[in-house]
Image (cartoon, rainbow, N blue to C red; front, side, top):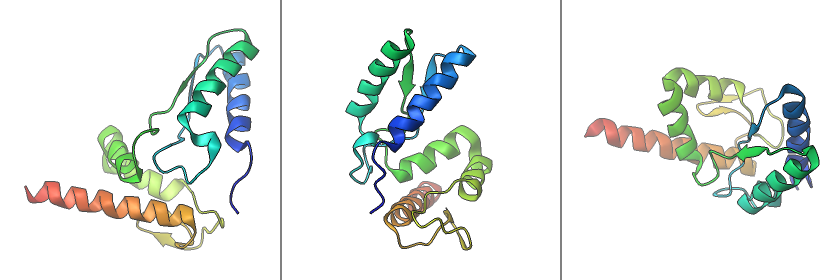
Length: 140
């Protein structure tokens, strides 16, 4: 089981405390309901509730931005390419990590990982769809 109850809630609480100290009003998180694998703390309703709770708890309005909420992994790769070109795509593949087993020994086209856990499977399928979309666009 890869579910860590409240993990994103904890991260958001820590981010809110840091944002408060730095005078920041916006927290950005990469949660996604489209392929959230059943984790309740990745849902849009949870993020809205956390925004309200954190704003009340910090006694000032905080906004939680979730730019990946309604796109799949292929859309995430496409967004990265749109925002930062191939350089950002390469950076994400090299420096980010989603493998539930923590595997960092084998580099795949989409990044490091075991290649078989649910997170690696989701990322690999998203990468394949992203690449197929790019090839389709290039052929036009």
